[in-house]
Length: 82
Image 1 (tube, rainbow, N blue to C red):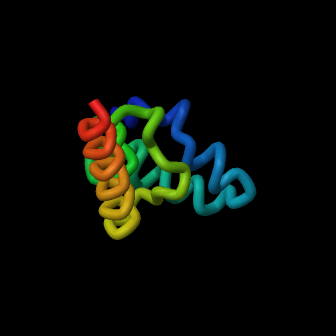
Image 2: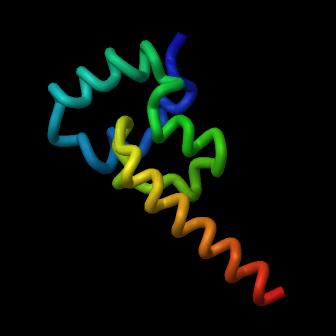
């Protein structure tokens, strides 16, 4: 089964549009394989597509941590302003 984000994943539209070999490899390995391991998929499952950063690569756990910290700060500041 393929990843449900395959047709709209911003990774391919924003970051890999000029890298067809990398795109093919990632799609074969993750999108049509172990997509549950993909950090972009995990992020989407948790927060939705609108908050998904274009800079997040499938195995980039450090970038994911940074994005999650940023979102948490954003949510905390929104809660404080209410």
